[in-house]
Image (cartoon, rainbow, N blue to C red; front, top):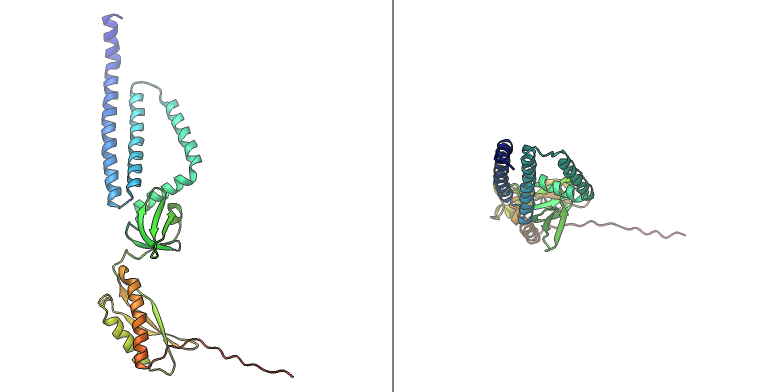
Length: 267
């Protein structure tokens, strides 16, 4: 190969090669930068470390693939067939992993919308527990009786979610029945004293004590104090115990349903 021919090739392809190298270097740098930013965003959302690593690598290699295709295209190499092969392969993998990818997409929605975070106490589709992890395909809940439940992200997105940790104060709904012959005003006073003397119960908003309904065998009183999520169970237990003790001391009965059965002797 003569010097003139080599010079002509360098003149023709040298700038393209330099341009492709520049595209690859800059594209890879941008991919790394976006990978770090994406990981930081996921970590701020308190997403599970496995999901952070997986999605960060997925974003990086996706951008790197686009960069390589752009660099090859700049060299004049036909990339249409390569893009078609990659597209067909992606489609085949997507069809084979349809359910898994659906859960993965649901996991991304949970990260973006953030209906709950790690540490929140929630009810997801009737399953109640504290969120211990938001992973690639499922959310992990720990129930009060120390059972670990895995809820698929696909089901979590498609179901009703109740988050008890989103607000500072949560209202407890309690009902206590007294007899029709008992002193209603005294019973309401005792209930208000119980909820007003507990430091775990908010006084703003103020607890509510009111007659809920006149039942078949009792006058039902609604008690609605506001407590923090972490105190819900303990406050419910303590109030119930205090009501029984205070009602007994005041001579207030707690009636229970009764049914009279009449027997007739047929001749």
